[in-house]
Length: 473
Image 1 (cartoon, one colour):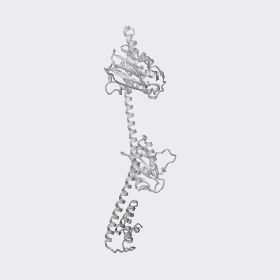
Image 2 (cartoon, helix red, strand yellow):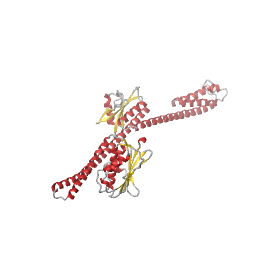
Image 3 (cartoon, helix red, strand yellow):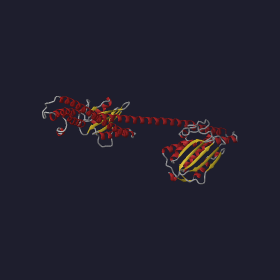
Image 4 (cartoon, one colour):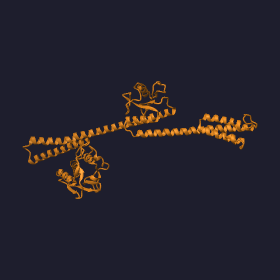
């Protein structure tokens, strides 16, 4: 129609451009086959309507044959290339959509830390993308079993578990649309991880029919992503179990070491001194008898302290309830100094507690134990006659309490390790189970505070506690 309107005003050969434009339009909007048909029909229509004699296929000027050939060649090239470009654009869009879908699936799966949560997330996301009901099977003692989601119904009948079992054992697709049990209502895809098959994905279409090739390929990618996520989660769980097991073994070994050495040593000393007193009491000098009695008392106190530390650590790990109230820090420090007064007899003790210290919101009994442990630690690890300082200060958000000494300091790299359970410093003459500082950290952290240790300028160590003030918690 456009060519007929232009025919009185435009040369016949130029009208061929109208048909080429039509072929281009059809190529952009239709398939390749239809574009080729449009190219052939356009040449025929150009001859019939636009080449004299009109309304016939006869040609008065044979030069038009060259025009026909050129027009047909150009039309075929245009239709073929345009259809190819359109197909490539569609494929690029499909690839982008597939990549976006897989990215969203990976993002959802990355946030899950349990195997069944990974399976449920993968199944629910697949149901959003495909017109199908999805269920995940997991092996239990070599047999496939349902992963029941938070629904009352099962999207797959149990009678088809044998097909899912076959897919799991052979690592191949089975069921609907395959050569294996094609009469079943669902398609079963093995979830193959990097090392082994971790399960089976069952897919039953809700709208009938079958999946297209592109949908089937995308479903395979879904199954692969789910399998890798499940395998990763299982590996993480195995690694965590192994780590906990190793820590348990280390703690058991340390506890056995503490019980076998640090408990038996004071018991042996008490037993030896008591046996000597019982056997030779009448023949002992008063000074010797007093030394034996002091030895019994000291070792019994040490034994009591060690058992108390073990009990305290057990209570802290069990999650005790703090009895917190506002307490003056000076009173807590004074009570702690009174408890270790006998051990401080050969020390130069200095305290610096400003009058402006505000009260702290703590369990005074437990926090007092922290100071006692820090003072005893300073006494054990520093020579007699050296100074020990207890200082305090306050900021806008926290009260700061320091216990300072002039001993050998802390070995480089052990500033954090000394707060671990059963870890003891490398001083050869110091006995203990390595629980005192671990108890300090547990109590301070229960009060939402922090404790740290570092070396002091000029020699020695500083143990610093930061406790949040009541208004800053």
